[in-house]
Image: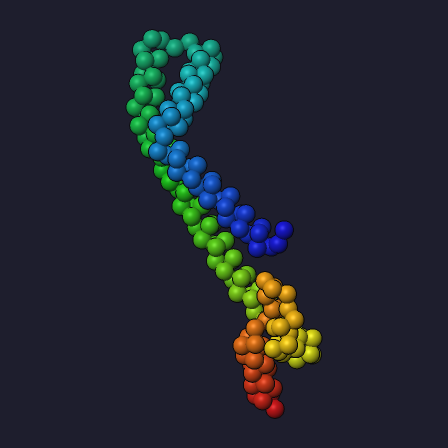
Length: 163
């Protein structure tokens, strides 16, 4: 597994997470479950409060009305929290995509540098017509004549500028 594969895997994972969060935001089931969890927690707290200090019926009614009044803001907070999660994931994905592009450009430059080095040392020779005739059908040459000559020209111009 190459480094580029790891980066792509990370981006794919974040895209899947983002899709799941976006789907949850649009799902009434998600909001219902969150509300049920909140109400269950409040009921448990009220039972504990009742056990520690008995409450009158009016006090209990007041607490329940307070909980019901807070329900709309709770749903809003669940919604905004999910939207914030989506924007954080979008920013993180953008950062990883930029990182992938930087890595790709670096990789291409390094590969080009190695090919130039091989051309200057003679490891890679200029393709000839004879090579083309002897090459098996369907196989591609490691480098085209045009690519070879362009890279050779770059090497010559670099040597000229150094002297």
